[in-house]
Amino acid sequence: MGVYTFVCRKSGDEWTAKQLKGELEASAATPYELQRSLVAAASAADSATGVQSSFAMVSPTSAVFQVNIGGAVGGPMMVSGGAAAGGAAASGGGAAEAPKEEKKEEEKEESDDDMGFSLFD
Image (cartoon, rainbow, N blue to C red):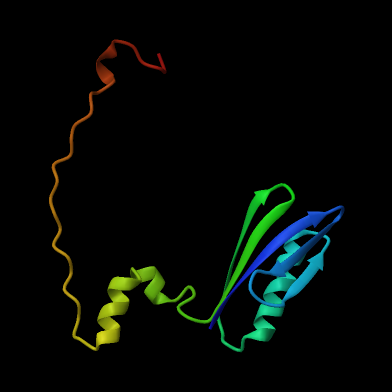
């Protein structure tokens, strides 16, 4: 299981990326091709399964790319609420109690129907 963070920069017509803390590097003509090669490089360095990535442009010529390998990537724990479900499962306890629902009275908004005209008249 590993997290690989890359700083990406565009110089001319080429995008380059260097791992923030490590030795992985890559270059490509487009950000998409760069992401694909970085995922391949990170996957080759880590034998765990399950890959999740995130690409964020910082400026038109720079970006941050992160590759998460292994762990609960996109698994049911992430979908079901993460920490609350994970804590109950890790402790080996029985089924977790469902939180009690609080009933809230909805505030009624003023109706626009009483304005004397309609948008579709």
